Image 1 (cartoon, one colour):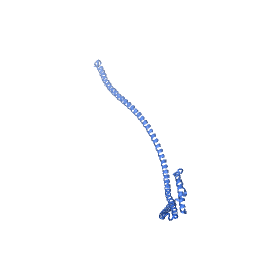
Image 2 (cartoon, one colour; image 1 turned 90 degrees about the vertical axis):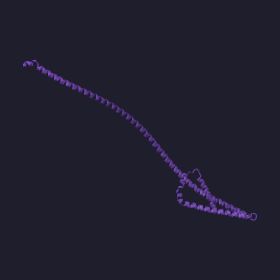
Image 3 (cartoon, helix red, strand yellow; image 1 turned 180 degrees about the horizontal axis):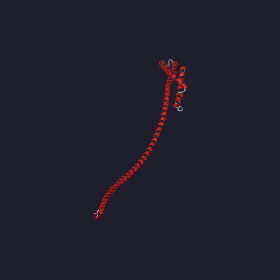
Image 4 (tube, helix red, strand yellow; image 1 turned 180 degrees about the vertical axis):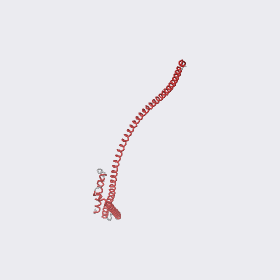
Amino acid sequence: MSLQWTAVALFLYAEIAFILILCLPLLSAQRWQKIFKWQIWSAMSSYWNKFFFAMIIILVVLFLDAVREVRKYSAEEASKDPQVHPNFSDHAHMMLFRAQRNLYISGFSLFQWLVMRRIITLIHQVALAEGSGAALQVQAEGANAAAQKYMEENQMLKEALKKEESTRSSGTQLMRQEVEKATKDLRAADDALRRSRVEVEAVKKQAQGLTKEYDRLLKEHQLLQENLYSGPEGKKDQ
């Protein structure tokens, strides 16, 4: 195996090992996210896209070269007669095997390279989704606690309002009773005042009657006195 294909094979083995490590359940997406945020990866991030596309171009070129060699040695094997050229047939078989091996190595390397990039992207997205989910869960728990607190406060306000309404209704009832009592007292006072006025009117009328009777008696008394003085003595004097 030539140096370039040895390097491609080692690159394929490294890809397989790295993908297996990525698929291990021991490391969660959050841990991989923390690993990808190391300073060394941050320093290499500016060269990552260039390296990624450069490797794709290299692997595509090697894959096309392997395809070309497979077609070449397949055509040569088909064009030669094994009975006439037995050594050439073995050599063609060997070269065709190497070309097919190189084709598989370069093809799987290219495929694993794309898969690895996709897995890293998915791990990053899952880590972001988990972080967002955790933040949303914290917000939901906070909102739930706030809603529970508001419900308790609302219940307390309802109970206080009921107590205030009951107190107000009892106070209103007490005020009604006091108003009814005051109304009764006012009616009793009004009746007493009316009776007092009637009695005063009766006393006034009685006083007027007594005054008239006194005047009549006084007049009779004067008449009697006049009659008395104008009796036999008065005649004797004449």
